[in-house]
Image (cartoon, rainbow, N blue to C red):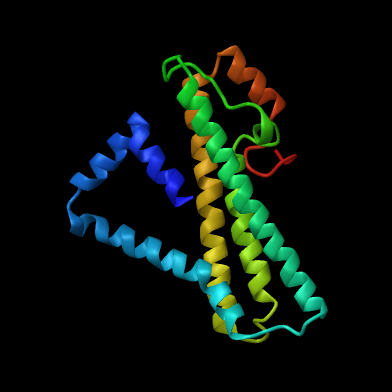
Length: 193
């Protein structure tokens, strides 16, 4: 995922500009954001750290639950990577200007408008589910894990809502966009409006 972001920031003109503008911002102005993001990630991965402290009994129901949620996390990671790569390729191959909607509208983009966000949500829900089976009565584990999960869900759902508004403003009235949006009514979670 990190490699994808690096390639995108080096090859997509609008992302290059965003990086350059961020680098022009004084370090002290960037520090609160960096600290907030660091804290969010600490909460998000806390479930894994708590899970590593304890083992579940082999063959138990808890192990089965843990394996299921690990599978959800892996599936989410793959979905996010494939959806991001698909979007990158469609945009890269487009010969039209940025004001014309080109998609993507196939593959996972037929299930929801932001399958990359859905994949990330599945990844973090899977990690939380795999980790929480060993939390027991540890209030610190539950609070930190739930704060991380709430944080990433808020970010992903908020970002998708913002991106939907931005796309509607930019592409509304274009047949390709209007048809796709009519068919794919779910923003992030497939089959939900």
